[in-house]
Image 1 (tube, one colour):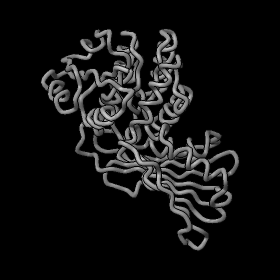
Image 2: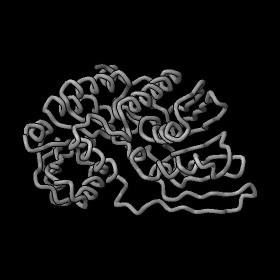
Image 3: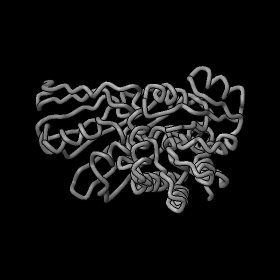
Image 4: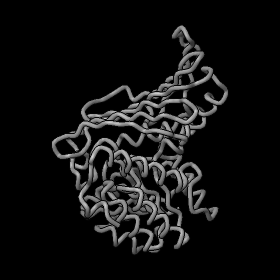
Amino acid sequence: MKIGILGAGKIAATLAETMNKLPEVECYGVASRNLEKAKKFTEDHGFQHAFGSYEDMLADRKVELIYIATPHSHHYQHIKMCLDAGKHVLCEKSFTVNEKQAAEVFRIAKEKNLLLAEAIWTRYMPSRRMIDDLLAKKAIGDVNKMTANLNYPLLHKERIVKPELAGGALLDVGIYPLNFAYMHFGDTVKEMHSAAQMISTGVDGENGMLLLYEDGRMAVLNSGIHGKSDSQGVFYGSEGCMIVENINNPEEIRIYDKDRKLIREIKVPEQISGYEYEITETISCIKEGKLECPSMPHAETLKMMHVMDVLRDSWGMKYPEEIEKL
């Protein structure tokens, strides 16, 4: 399938290297607002065509699927552009700035009979099923609590600190512990409590989230942009605990007994980068005529956007009206 990448930054580069190793992908084109940047990208990553504007790539009838790799603040606008051009779309997280934008582009996609999906890679990875299977088999007994965190030193990145680019920890890294909790504990949350520390620009630099479930379970989550954390997801059970190393791209799963003795170590399957799973599932779904990806259906994206809307509202964290509106 002929794929075009909209945006030529770091994520786009990793994606390109992954796509080059997938037989079902034809690395067709990349679009940037800077033609020279697009040309260098094609030379570095083996793409066929460089476009000096997004509109030029979308006007090429040969492009079948667009991967959007631009800042969060522009996703809504860029998704609409792609759909209006008749292209299927796989869009980086955070999918949009808010739930109402996500609902609108999903409506348009269905109206135009086009696949549209959120590219949050952990939802598509085999590690997701591995973790769920271990929990279902009660590898550590009855589980009533989990913790998850993701923190990176990101203060130097413009897209992270600027409100006009939908910055802050939540939409960029906080989305991962939230998705981790909803993937493995479900969505029967009866209460959500949270707090955030803002940086000088008015976006969250650190946040903590507490989810209380109807069945008595609890999830304790945090994310931040000041420094690196252990990035672990930990499940606490009656017979021990289970640690998932790196919730952003799980590397291994370790199971400990009640005496903190390591009793099992499980490696995840070898991968190219981790991006391949979302790409191959999207291509398969398009070929089958589906409009959603089973690993991240529209309802799940809307759910996560709603949760983040509620969190931002409780913190009083608002983005400029021009990026929040439809």
